[in-house]
Amino acid sequence: METIEPQIETTEDGSPTLRHPLLHDTYHSLRGAEGESRYIFIEQGLHEWVNRKRRALEERGNAEIGVQTSPVIRILEMGFGSGLNAWLTWQEARKEGWHLYYETLERYPVAETVAAQLAYAADPRFMALHRAPWDVEVPLDAHFTLKKRHCSLEDCTFETTFDLVYFDAFAPDTQPELWSFEVFSRLYDHLNDGGILVTYSAKGVVKEHLRQAGFVVKRLPGALGKRHMVRAEKPANQVDSENLVNPVNSTNPVNPLTVAACDGEK
Image 1 (cartoon, rainbow, N blue to C red):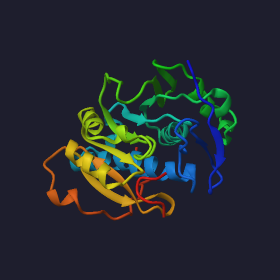
Image 2 (image 1 turned 60 degrees about the vertical axis):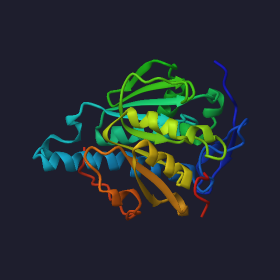
Image 3 (image 1 turned 180 degrees about the vertical axis):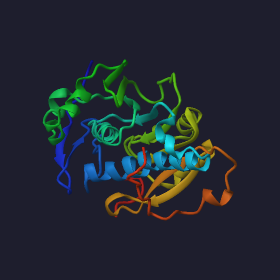
Image 4 (image 1 turned 120 degrees about the horizontal axis):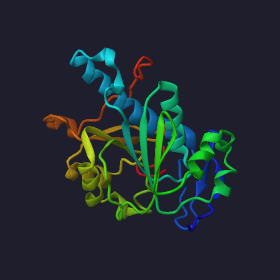
């Protein structure tokens, strides 16, 4: 398999990111790679989905069963990239005792020799992500099953549905074809009811295409001083149309008991 060798750059929070040699864009915000990923994908994505699941169980009187009433939390990531999002998610699954299926797409796999130079590689699990074979499901431990897929989003077909989408493509100005109505419509069709999609970009065209695809779009404060990000939901029930346009409060506390760049720029 052909791989690429991106340049390593250190971001403002001290964590490393990569710069794509063909697209000339960074894989994460230069304000902080790890900080951005934790805020957008872990806090506003994974923890938000878990908290919603727990609230739904409480409403049905099943809170004592816990979030794992559903056997597996199913995540789709657009852009495996450096592996940072997958690594942070695996850490969270182990810490909380969750069981995750993690499917991630990548058109330009990063060379293992480059990944090994990142600071995250001090954790053997980070390199286990990179060494896992492509296009097959790999149970990495009792909490985390990985399926890396060497394909572009436009060409991929899916054999399952998902609870959560990490949409971490390169910026809309860099890869506009990945931020289209057609792409978001496909993702909507492969999300379970009540599923959510999170992304760093809150550009107007992104929000418009998400709404056209059927998502309820909420604009949230962005990571590390950026103005905004987006969380989009596939409604399980009829949605109050007011939710389509109103921003929401930035406070999203994570219950420990539960099992300024311009918009669109990284």
